[in-house]
Length: 593
Image (cartoon, rainbow, N blue to C red; front, side, top):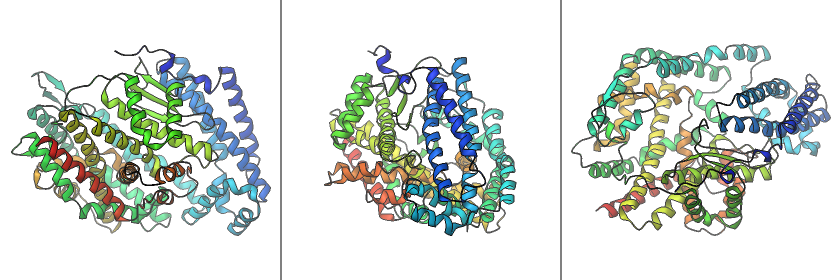
């Protein structure tokens, strides 16, 4: 039975502001601070006092803006049809633009200042210590900054540079009509990008095949147009990288991510050396599906699906707390505080934002949005989002607001660690072998999709960018051939690699944010390495892990992960994932045999 959707299961936004009068007062205070910040424009680096005073004001404004922005966004997401909420959020967004404009001079003025003088300030003025990481980051990237005039030209061209991505989004999300298929009940239904995966999970192979063929028929019709858009996007990114004195677009991307080319290459090389592990799971999947031929459109069907288990939120809460107990008393006490003190807006409601997220608010506490529908999968969502929340809690309470925002390279680590700990707990405590098989299968499928599949995408991007940077002209057939070849390599002989899959690259929106997807694979690898050590109860490791979560972005991401013995530049890190994957494959084999 579903709990009453009372205040116990809703956010208490009074934790941010007791009323809108307080909210408006804080908004006005931010505007006043921004006016003070503007007085340092043109003389920011003249003396250490100016640099300190400006950063001190920036820190104050940022703390206040986090609260104001969070209040506006959370209020809006509770009821996205409420006109007052929409208006409030628009006001906050305008304030955000004003904030960006008012503080936009800080980075360029430090960049173009005398570096020896700035280093001298940092060395001799201890007041600048809390801001040193941010200032040093700016100085470190100085060699890649162009003249003021050139930077202005690039800024003015930003809309033009993003045109291929915007056109791709418009074409594929608005213009594309994929046609109709017959569902399991024999009824004609319209295929869309959003319901495509739903039909790939259908129990009927014929339905899966129809969806697959319809999807790629449309992409095949427009593949030449999409090739032009994608190549234009790659050329724009590679040209900008060259202008900024990077050796490649990959070097620019990993520099932006706080990573390195060695991280990227180690991931791909490690998977290349251990790709047979993926074949083992795919061979097992084929056997479980009882297919003489397993096609690309069969990969999303779950042969272990046992139907939906109803679970109450209180049961989900107990399961999460029991699974994460291994992280220690302090961690569990804080989770209880989250559950008992309105950190989570739990249930789906009319006009509430869909999906789930965690939003850390500096100086307050994180806020978690879920749309709980009493499904077992919701339990994993709760564990995942609370992983983000605890990361935010630890970083926010141990770093200043500037250093508290951890980077994308580590953003999914704590959340995925929680998912893996929950999965391990559920598998170990499940007495029904059919349900245990379902849990194991879902865990393996998550690793296949996040580790192997994202690495395949990453390898595709690397190959394409390298060819374009070396002056090769690539046609749609060249891209199709590269992508088809990678599918053969990553899926092996257990899968019939359907000809149509060569068009799949053309529907991946992430490719327009170049070299983004590899972070999914490195994130799950780091999480598995960490979770394995936690589950093995390695002495002192939980304390090391919590200490890492406290660092925010006060160190480089790859150095932060080294605190917990995870070296993303070392191929051995990825072997943890391979070993974990293979062990779960063997466990699943034993259950189903």
